[in-house]
Length: 287
Image (cartoon, rainbow, N blue to C red):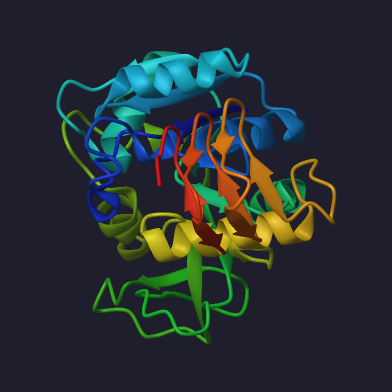
């Protein structure tokens, strides 16, 4: 099995933080988000990993390589979407089962082995990893039959009847080589086009329902929520009692106060009387 991490997006909802850097390079409890995803794949036993690039590609390369990770980069001169990402990396992925995963999400220990066993037991061409719909969110859902077969994605195909469950897609797919052969050149989207076409054609495409913490980090509020949970839970090698992370080279006035969960990136400076409470500061911020 090989993997591809999706890291080409513009990070529009996180601007101005992403004007000159990719959103996947933002640090979540001291580790760039994309590096957390790469290490999740390595822990699962996948060592051949591609990362697609478009917006601020050098920032992704630097973040990955500075953490000691070695991957294959697939640069897109024009952004190609989730389907086009597979086409762009076709030479690297050729002939392999592929695990495709978002590079801008925080995943709290998903059981990828169980997902793979489900995928194989169903003879699936493509499997989406799904969780319960997050409370308070208005994502368009994925509808499945009792056996997990995909019936609708965001209401499509409209000709299909609805399913017994409406679930949330985590950004993780397992794809067979035959499925990749259906994807041609140019921009395309896996969920809105290729999966919907496969459902309409009656092909064996499924959703695996599981549960684990899963955060879309595409907005400041969601990013902060994930950071707080990660710090408070002591995940990623942090001690449970460590609720404040202070990066290297920070200068903090003795009268400044920091109340966790909070994180200060490298080189931050807090002046006299500053208060930081339940917040995250990127590298080099001065208050």
